[in-house]
Image (tube, rainbow, N blue to C red; front, top):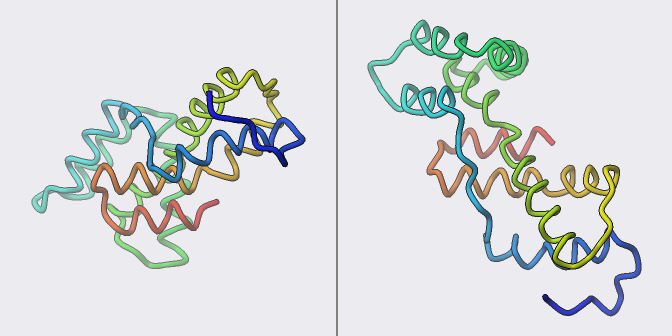
Length: 153
């Protein structure tokens, strides 16, 4: 167990003190991507792929399709970007959240910090973009996905 921070007085400060060194080292466990997400990533890397194939693939998961369409439509309207890239950005923009949750819960358990839901939400909101960018970079995702992860906080 790492030593306690001498100036950390609240549970969230203690949690962040223990979590930050892991993030600074890029010490994150990459999440497994759902099968549809993996297929979408492969398809967007294929120069012969088209929007119809991508749409068909995403529509295999109705909840995912609704979410991606909502995000992609607001990205494409304001930025006038490539639709395929917008779909992929919508699919992956929050990829850091579950990783931060898992890391925070693990650190809280190891440090014997009582982490309630509001505290975990604060930590997730504070670090999901940073962790999402790490994941995107480690997975070799396109630069525009990293940019969207940074912007959609």
